[in-house]
Image (cartoon, rainbow, N blue to C red; front, side, top):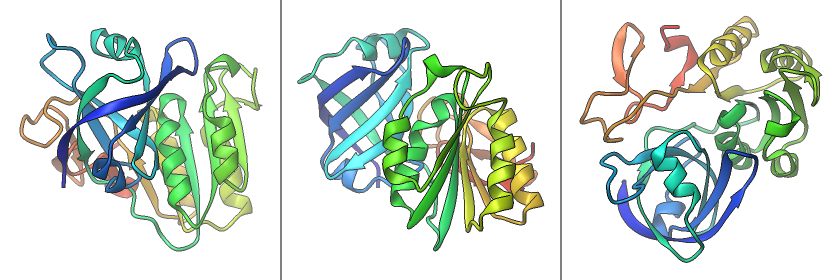
Length: 247
């Protein structure tokens, strides 16, 4: 059940030029969070809408999110200090249902962070991740700590395989038996990963990203087409069965 809580900042660190990792003391909010869910954080007094951010990791009562600075709200968030308190609403949305067996987690860019907690909650997991370049790579050490293997692609070839992450997914699915594929990233990537999983007859679940207002399904901003009907990413998702998404 979602709750609103004032959460003290434990750490705030810069991962790349515009990506930050934020760890909060979130108490019961953290303990009830499932992989794939998100929180809505109030960013500054003058900004009406909260900012939805996927949960990257949970450790006891500590909850970590990783966000990219994209506007006034996230810029404000990146300037906070340890000890300050943030108004947090969560956990929100429908996350990943963890199956029995090994899972392949797939992340692209800022879609990589939620894959860390998903992999951590699985019995066994491998990861395929993609970044624009080596300078944009994040959380590789953390993923290697919880995954059997981690393979990397970069758009410019400066890290791992030169190309897109979906090529790594096809190779991984041809070599190992997986109970499911979990993915989060840009929509074109998700579509390609979903196609590869379908060809391999492996269930695939994708975390969709849409602009959000309320975060609880009341404002109707984040509607997307699933199975020929409009559903709300914040309430019905953000995780959907890839075969049901109207790509």
